[in-house]
Length: 277
Image 1: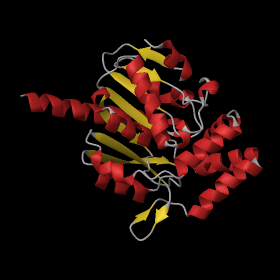
Image 2: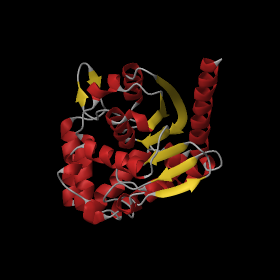
Image 3: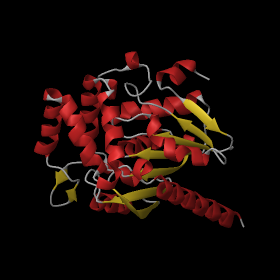
């Protein structure tokens, strides 16, 4: 086990199953966002949690502006964690941009992974009419970055509320705001640029792993049209439309999130057994 990687990404290992589930957070978040979901899998799976470099309790000294100017830098960190722990047949669960980080990692070294579970994924947040609508105009995203520079605390408050988009779960917005505010603003801004201006649409048809897309209702960050697009482009995908509103169902609606993941994994297992008989 490479302790440098374990420390760099603050890797946590729990559970007692033989197969591994690796949970990847979304933008600006650390592994604690999975606390309401990951425990439910510890009885049946080996559960691995980690922080991106610059987030949570990772080694902030390892942050490299050039490496993390592309999602491939974050994907390499996922592959490093897999290598450090000698993983195989990993079920990768990613939230938001974490979904695409997992997809990119699977394209580079597919032997580590068995399936992908994407919560609120988007391959591209920008609109490219008439063929693609990611949800944002370029000016809007540039304004977001500009606000991070001028008033980081104000940005954290506004963006947390936008992501949550659910008046019934104000506590989730407050949690997200706290996480954003505890992150180095320079690193958060770099991650925001890398995340929101990425375009990985061309990679989707190359992803051959079984993939579950969990699409929330009223998700401003990854609207339903984006989830439908991904479902059309990914060769082995299944989409489930959630009752959960907003962009963070693992925080606001953990029971529904857990149930849909378990159901999908049971379906995959049934197909596997059926294929052997």
